[in-house]
Image 1 (cartoon, rainbow, N blue to C red):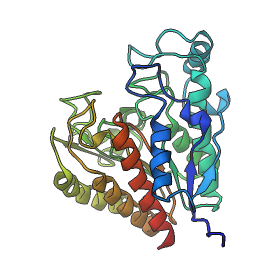
Image 2 (image 1 turned 90 degrees about the horizontal axis):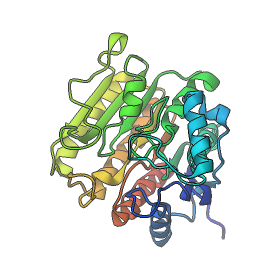
Image 3 (image 1 turned 135 degrees about the vertical axis):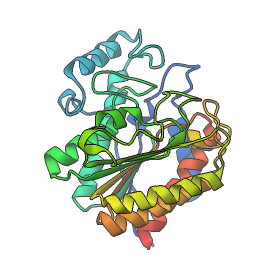
Image 4 (image 1 turned 90 degrees about the vertical axis):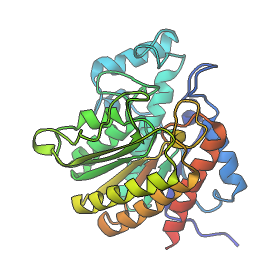
Length: 321
């Protein structure tokens, strides 16, 4: 007997798996496989819908990025040498196609969610929240999250969007791109920027101009555990409900889990499970169920496998509620 498919879309495949950097770089190309192996072991792939990756066109990438940045990535993809930022994000042969797959797949998933084919999507290799309009940064060649935000507005007329980020690093590429935009609601829980990259996301950064009060940065101290995460999550959830978004994006980086080599928090996967569960409920209340989740960072393969698997598990549970 064939099992019924859920209304959760999983975005994974070889083109996305190629987004990673040369040997020795913390953002490796084996992250997607580590997750898929664990998700298969847990039986999570039986009912989830699948979306094959697609490489975005240069024109699609320019919905957010400048032409100059897109052309630099294309050139770096051909030469396979040099850097796309100040020393964190190297070129490699095919970097344009790999980064383009992150962006194109996110746009296709968005079309599926808006079209009502699914209520929620999960793209593990995605959530490249440091890239700016005109530059790469922090392992992020393009910013798929901002591509989705721009497309929600230009193609689907949805302006009031919530961006929730629980990656250990502040999502500066999203925050500063929309710092003065009152309809882009930001909730960002991260390790205090005084202790790690990119050094931003202080609690008093709450938006500028007409957008003051629409952004919420909740920095955690090094060593913070699930208990501290739950405390600030209550603040975050109340804020989101008050702001009443029409669509929710979440970047659920698992570099906030204990043991990540680039950070200092001590969360367990239960924090990611809890956040996903609560966002599913909020999406049902406020956004017709519409929620897109992206994997973000994570540089300990055990954490990647288990952290992203609990996120998918909660999305699937929400699907059957």
